[in-house]
Length: 165
Image (cartoon, rainbow, N blue to C red):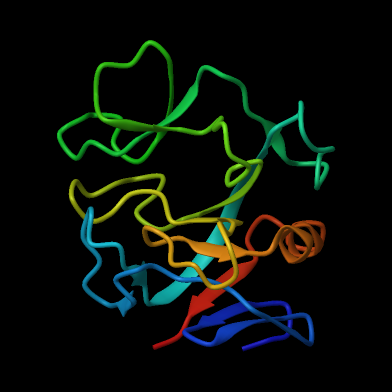
């Protein structure tokens, strides 16, 4: 592993010589990730994109993509667009990317089960803002707003995210 890797553990995350408090899924760490289990998948993943709310924050990186009210993420394993960004109107189960709360004001996308998705293997392992310190997620990795912004300004497409058991 390198200092350029985001190394996520139960106790925190290491990146660029620093250690950050972070949150993982309420289901803990798992090597058997499934849709709805609340677990954060163990393994080596990559940053493959970044989304942000342009009405709330400045672009955190030159390659970040703005999200709007029509942007959703499909979490329906029976949908052909499972684990993909989709637009309203949308009839399948989904998650709104533009939320009333600030959790998704800045989101880094990982390649967990993406872009080619296996139905039921778990959707959208994002890196985003936490609700409160160490509050568990639905399987994502979360940070304080300040630390998330610091990390987002330094990652690149392809940065490794190593989720260690």
